[in-house]
Amino acid sequence: MERNLLITLMLVGLTLQATQTLAKPKGKSSKLPAFLKVCHRDSPDLNVCARESFESLEPRLMDGIPELYIPPMEPLRVPEIKMDQDSGAIYLHSMYKNVKISGISKHTLNNLSIDPSQLKFTLSLTFPKLKLESEYSIKGKIMMMPMLGDGNCQVELTNITMATELFGEEYMKNGASYLRIKDIKVKYDLANVHMQLDNLFNGDKALGQRMNDFLNENWKSLSDEVRPLMIKALVDILRASIDKLFEAFSYDELLPTMKQ
Ligand SMILES: *[C@@H]1O[C@H](CO)[C@@H](O)[C@H](O)[C@H]1NC(C)=O
Ligand SMILES: *[C@@H]1O[C@H](CO)[C@@H](O)[C@H](O)[C@H]1NC(C)=O
Image 1 (cartoon, protein in one colour):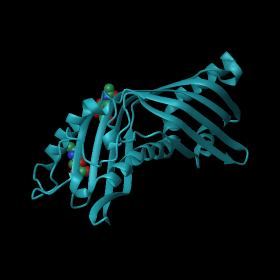
Image 2 (cartoon, protein in one colour; image 1 turned 180 degrees about the horizontal axis):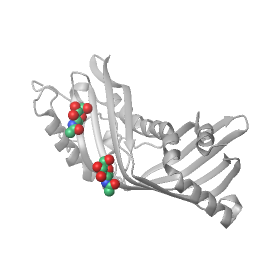
Image 3 (cartoon, helix red, strand yellow; image 1 turned 90 degrees about the horizontal axis):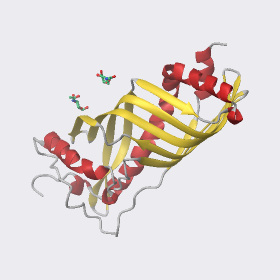
Image 4 (cartoon, protein in one colour; image 1 turned 90 degrees about the vertical axis):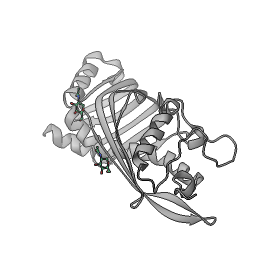
């Protein structure tokens, strides 16, 4: 059977559950932190202000901003990602624990824009290199070959551009207008992937090396196949923080009008 078809079968319908601990604000007061540069939604300079606000937050982003429900970003830690697929003879169960993602701080901001009339927020970032390290356990089949392993893995992603579009909607809560997420769209492009799974096949070095070579030679089709899954993982991670931010602060607190 063709490689690509098998890879497709293996990965279609994967479900992912990402669990992660989120920073909690200290105390109960829902006041925006004083260091946040607040922008006015009816200002003609809204996008300039938003970019300045983002840039002034950047040094803090890396350690996390609990007041804004933003977890530490350098490294970003995700306790567990689980991917399961079951379809007849083809199956793949994999689990990644203590996922550590580094390289997020070395990004460039391509675009940050807010369109209040549509409640649309656009953010595009490029990361020259992201490194993922985790413990993994995989059991399944790739190309009729058993895929079995349990150990450490490293993945290096080169030159990723990630564009996020968030559409919000307003609703009333306790007499004030709040935002909630209507939709998040994430797109990404990347130039290269290199991965290394240690201890495949109970430590059989020759088999393990062959599988790693196969994965690296085929990263492009693999990465296309896992794209929906990766996007879901990214959306889940973003959504977890943004939901909390939108719940804690009203629209007028987040993006006041100039008269307020
Ligand atoms: C930034 O995003 C906005 C909204 O999606 C878009 O209209 C604009 O063309 C983008 N700007 C750049 C420089 O890509
Ligand atoms: C990185 O990606 C950007 C946008 O996709 C592209 O313009 C640039 O040439 C890439 N650089 C490298 C070194 O791959």
